[in-house]
Image 1: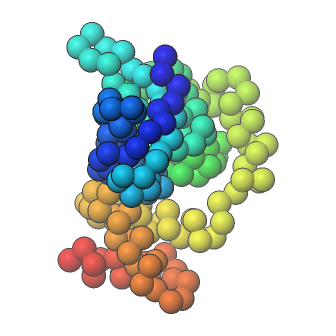
Image 2 (image 1 turned 30 degrees about the horizontal axis):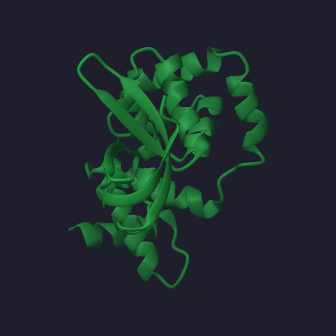
Length: 201
């Protein structure tokens, strides 16, 4: 098992990167949440990894935090019908703490809005993760401590709204981030959506 890669970031796309480790380029699939935290290509980088072995390929998945990788593995190993593609979509669509809060609250609507998930898969995620002994209880205990700030909630709501309008997750994230960069004041979710739509149109 490859636990992490440390080297130079050779290429970076929203869904995958190439890490140069002593002359060997490793292609790593990543969620949008990790893409947003990448340094510039050519910079040193360390990324946690999960190796998925299939009959026709060995695929590396990469994460900037252990909480992202833990959630990825939890979804893979404990939710029926969830493979790496859907697990990555979950990480791209919701911050880890917000996803945990949604599972604890049984908020199927929030999870089903994630691109590529849908209502049936969201129901299965909530049901099967809640059934895992200690998982939901542990999340519930930590949720007050790790509750997302008001700003995080606004960004999340605005991004989900854009995704529900048919924009891709990567486009939505980029537009919201651009609005944040050019705005001098703290915007409401509605204002973020309006400004982002201007950028996207």
